[in-house]
Length: 95
Image 1 (cartoon, rainbow, N blue to C red):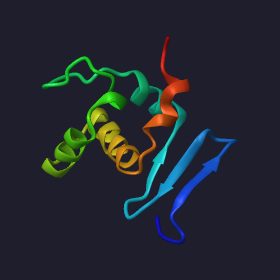
Image 2: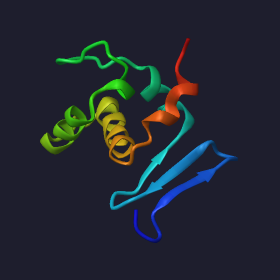
Image 3: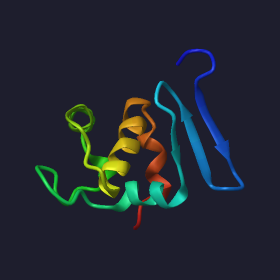
Image 4: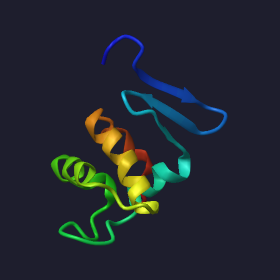
């Protein structure tokens, strides 16, 4: 990351922003969905979104994401994957 980029945490709202070329804001509900929601279709159907392979997420992002909730979540997942933040999701997973 270059100067001025990084993660800004906002404790009171439960949101944080990843400052990259694409500004992306997350909230707690979306983070829980990313950790636990299964991919609803395709080759990785049933796999939790956070566990999708990075090359697949990058490919999907470059192809164009759907204009719905899953597309919005996949756009956030793209930012998480390319910034190497997926290891932060352990505590959010349902047991």
